[in-house]
Image (cartoon, rainbow, N blue to C red; front, side, top):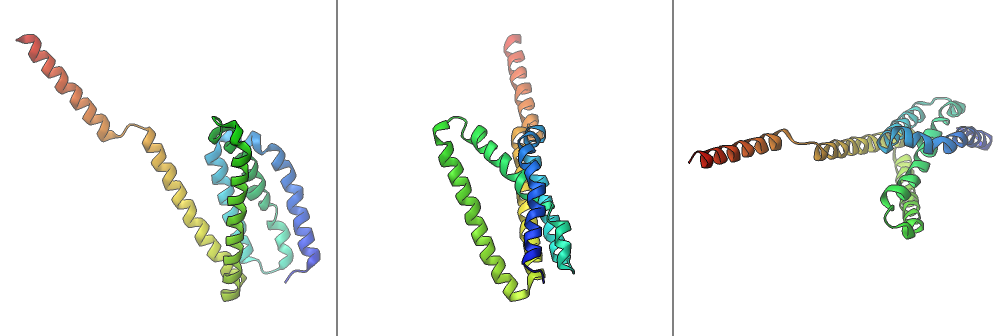
Length: 182
């Protein structure tokens, strides 16, 4: 229900908020880490899409659009930094290729997402499209959180593995004690 002036104002509001976040996103990334950056941007995206799906007045989009800064500006800078300094640290000659691959994957995902969103909005309307996006992104967040949980457990000693190692050590000690006594 909005017009081109509203779309222009929406982009202006988003840009005004994004510029400082682009500038400080690297500092934020170093302060809280990549997992928290992804968590914050994902939750911000869910809140933004939920708000879009509930809007009754098109001009209220101007109150929601600043959250776009969290979902893009806070996400983009740390991704590039993480790609360069962590994933490609051992192969600096591949940084341009890595960034190009990241951009290609990001924009390919956007193209697919926009195509699916267009189809969903033609089938069920814009609210249906935004709410479907909520389900998709919420499911993806649960999947990523489970991978993070599994990754955490992969680096921590498992209770059963620690117990088995302790039992093996006891058996070795008993065998050693018996050998010394004989």
